[in-house]
Image (cartoon, chains in turn brown, red, blue, yellow):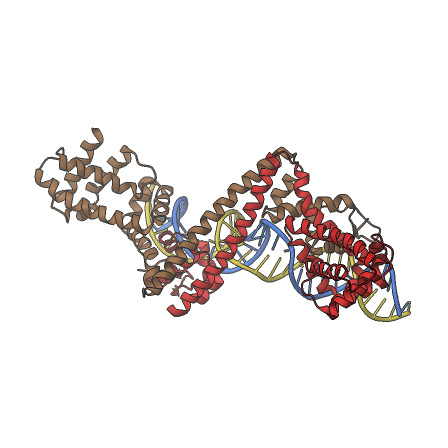
Length: 252
Length: 252
DNA sequence: CATAAACCTTTACGCAACGTTAAGGTCAAG
DNA sequence: CTTGACCTTAACGTTGCGTAAAGGTTTATG
């Protein structure tokens, strides 16, 4: 039995355009072309098309199908396992999105205006924006664009709980700085606690922490008046104290 | 604070190209264009972009976002519910695909060669193909292309279990035809059972059943020698008997 | 103050998998 | 011999940008 495009299309449930496209990309070539230029498909092509459609229904890309159908069974199985992993990821993401949508709807039914729902995403952006405005240039020069972008990406990935925890930790650090400063000793227990918390705080945004980077940042705090101004709001001379505490912490 | 494209891009985490694209499609226009043709964005645009990104993370299309952000809260909630329904469908389809992939892998680990796994899909195609070959033209002329396509689509949607049940029912009909024929009475209980089974069998492929169509088909069985030949393989004169039984069944 | 570096602009192709005209040959039926 | 059904290639549209290319503007640096 031989078929022209639309005949094959009818029995296989795809469109003629699809068959021409498969011919074009080399996925399924007709058995021959007749004297009028018509595509003629035979039994072999019908069988091959069946296999193609089998994988297509499984959401496999044509590019992948192209490879799969010329592989032995063993590799086909591996390909399917691989594909399954991809599908799993896809579903995980879908689940997360659905959860967010549900939460958003729920909060709206609880009377929270939409603006407030959208605001959290905005809060994180605000944080990034302020970081950029205040320190962006120095940090980018010192550590490179990639590091900064990675940090921003990490911040964006934070959940609301993470975000809250981070800002709370920030406040805690300011309080601890005040108390530790009173001891007058950057090696004191309180001061070392402070340094430890400071490290924890950095981990929220740093993608890879190193002692050198931490030390470098501490030095920059002292060198840059904007950082100095910030940490000195807790207590005058706080920035230098913080740096000294960090240096001792890193050496221990 | 005012921003050029790439500045806004940096603080918002999207690319400059994205912002230009949003401008192009009218999703987010800059506050103004300066004398050099640069896009300048203000606080208002930053806020709007935040909202846009909020919805984008939820997998809402830009076209839908465009509508949503100029709607009041009430409509936004409706839009989200609508969107949630779409996501649910998407996940259901994903689950089904994953199940099929899992089953296929399992059967391969059970030693079933891939070809056989792919064969089932092929079996259905074969059925459709044969239907087309044998009766396609008449049926298409009689009932129109749409009806036939709908029927084929329904066949393709069958599960393996459905398919098996249908072919078994087909055999049962042939057997029942033999037995009922022995009664010599198309109104007999066996013959009426036959007609009932025949209707059940049709329902596997018919998208909307009607008495008229069933009667018409019965007449066609008798008029077309290929159908006659088929049903007469069960018993000579079986086709006419089947028609009579169906006619009585439909009148009762 | 000249020039390089950084940043801006528009234009336009590429991606996946076809759907959809459009313009024009081919073939079977009346 | 003419419909009408069916075939062909060519080419644009879809979604959301990425990625040059070619060229003007602003800022930094020697």
